[in-house]
Length: 78
Image 1 (cartoon, rainbow, N blue to C red):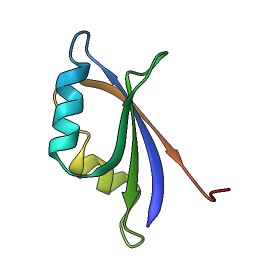
Image 2 (cartoon, rainbow, N blue to C red):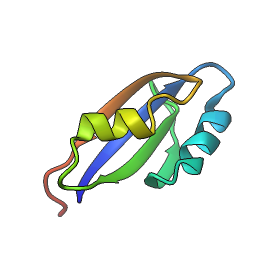
Image 3 (tube, rainbow, N blue to C red):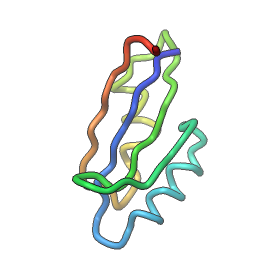
Image 4 (tube, helix red, strand yellow):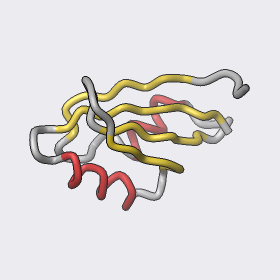
């Protein structure tokens, strides 16, 4: 499994709604609200054989209320 972190910028007032929808998809292992440029950050494990972009697009990025995302790939845990 590949670990990626995805940050979500939500439409004003919709962060909780978006967070509920993300959890309903049963894709993320952890989800947090954040301060700064993005409203939420999720830890996602993508199967090794899956294309990260297609996996995330098909499972998360069509949720209403998401304005922008930022995906960070990981390589090694220390």
